[in-house]
Amino acid sequence: MFKKLRSFLVNDIGIDLGTMNTLVYVTEKGIVLEEPSVVAINADTNKVRAVGSEAKKMIGLTPENIRAIRPMRDGVIADAAVTDEMLRIFIRRAVGHFKIFRPRVLIAVPSGITEVGVRAVRESAISAGARSVQLVEEPLAAAIGVGLPVNNPDGNMIIDIGGGTTEVAIISLGNIVTCSSVQCGGDSMDAAIINHMQKKHNLLIGEPTAEKIKITIGSAYPLEEEKTMEVKGLDMGQHGSRLPRAVTVNSQEIREALEEPINRIVYTVRKTIDGSLPELSARLIDNGITMAGGGSLLRGLDKLISEQTGLAVTVGHDPLKAVVNGTGIMLQNSNYLFSQPQNSLIGKGTRL
Image (tube, rainbow, N blue to C red; front, top):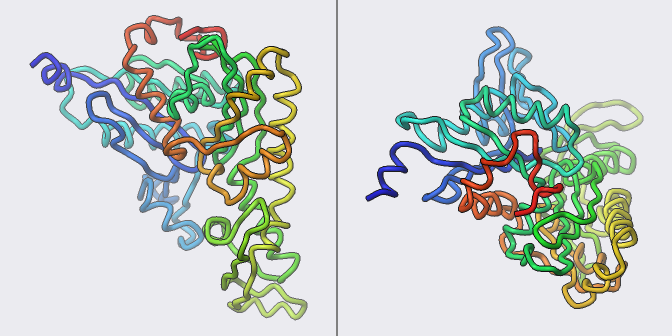
């Protein structure tokens, strides 16, 4: 009876505010929203036309008076006003219109976020209707979400590959001990594919097509059976016809196109291990490395990282939802979380 009454009055919510997608976890309900971080704006009226999946379908297809915007770039807020509106709509969808109290919100942010970025995220959440806001570093939330024993006196390593950033952290006793962050993730992979198609095939494609190529035939390690795919785009050949054209590409050339962003991720992993304490790095021999985030699903990436580090690498359970599931687990201790100073960042010197 008390839980039902509390659910009617207010819900605490956890948010994975990602470059590519935003996910919302509501206490007593679980994940209730998973939408692309995209907003379509009518430039004539400056009003929101669509948010989430509906807005993403408009990317590259809008008339001049409609702009499809991704307000998050490299894991941080690039357009504060649009982010405010997107969060407001997502929070309203998640908790409904009839709560007596505004929700308390736990938001996962990149470990390399600046103080300015922290203020921007907190102010956006408050503006969107949050009663109070606490922030947690994404790698810690991801580690909790995939079930790593983060509170143990042990070395647990997580690689969280998102749309805008890759976070690599070694965690012990509820804290991030060593962490590295690089502005390289799914977006960088898509950009590399776009660049490759222009250089090799004189074909101009958009972000949605690049993402489809990455998901369909992309890989980081040679495949047992290489794949092919027909790609349609705009001809940018020498004669400048600028007419639609289709070409067939294979997984080997796309793997070569992805080498630069993948090498940056591997380098960040090796740098994190190299900068860790000897006892912690020694524990990784037994515990291995766990991957999370959408980028962890790239074919063969776990095998490549294992080969480059000499450590066992596994993809965690439900990697796309690891961060938001982690915020949900953390909200079980919400009274502790929201008793922390508002300028604190859970994971960086704030033990769980």
